Length: 409
Image (tube, rainbow, N blue to C red; front, side, top):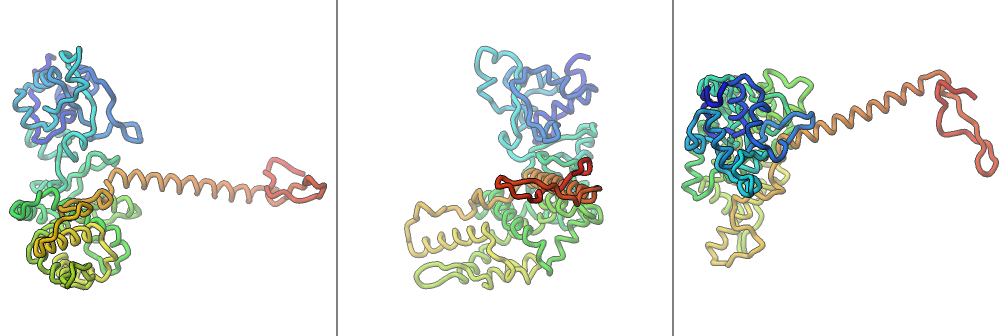
């Protein structure tokens, strides 16, 4: 069948590699069979199990873009509007003597146009007529499919799920509907919505790690069980990693809304206002109590042992207010942007946490195997007999190692 005989419609924000995979599926071919249309200069990133990562992205040169447009039966201008990576140039394939040949280069989606997540298969089938897997560039505040009640998971993690069912968690869908209002407030405050959400997400993720030991916390455990379909069972650690972003999403939206509220910033200033300059905010101040109430956890503020992202934001807001009122020049070693999230304050990605969990479980299995083998040796016939030997000074002693069952004195 000639290329372009079947039309493959791109999705808004879709990965180029995802569109190629769906085009191959429309022709009944594996993705590798269609990728032969391009000269690939490297290999895609792979999972520990050997499979290709779902967020592996393809960057094409000009000749390669024309081949993709012909394959999908879609104008290049349409692909340029739909695919964020379609117009990305790579000097290694765009220049040189072989630039006229259709070439492709594999990249990580996060390094091309941002984080990637699995698309909703029901929305994909409704839009394209194909009930196939699609991977799209999606910011973390846009992971809820409100039409079908699904939380779309990260594509970089090595786990079998593509989405979490939100039909029993309506507060997550309601938070997604509230987010556009919070984003508009951020724009009015001259703050990038991405920065506001990233900071709020880091603040709540810090509490999430501590909440396992909070006796008064019952909202997150119930929500996590409902996300798991009723109960997490024996996989609590795995579900705490995979379901974290969905479980804390309502609180992240609420914290972003609170930090953007001028009234809350005024309360913070009154808590820390003192002669001679701003001081640290007390843990039992009005700001901490009001923030806990907005999160429906009035008991939270005494348990907070120092939320690093929140404390950094408070310090930057206080310094900015103090400098503005006292006309104090800025110092270069202090960050001027309160919404700047430091690298050490960013929560770990799901893929990294799953990798660490797998390593811990593998180490635990190795230790259990060694202990089991040691118990078997001790229980074997003749295991309690010691081997006599003579040391270098001629004294007869007992060895520290027991005899195996196949040997005797």
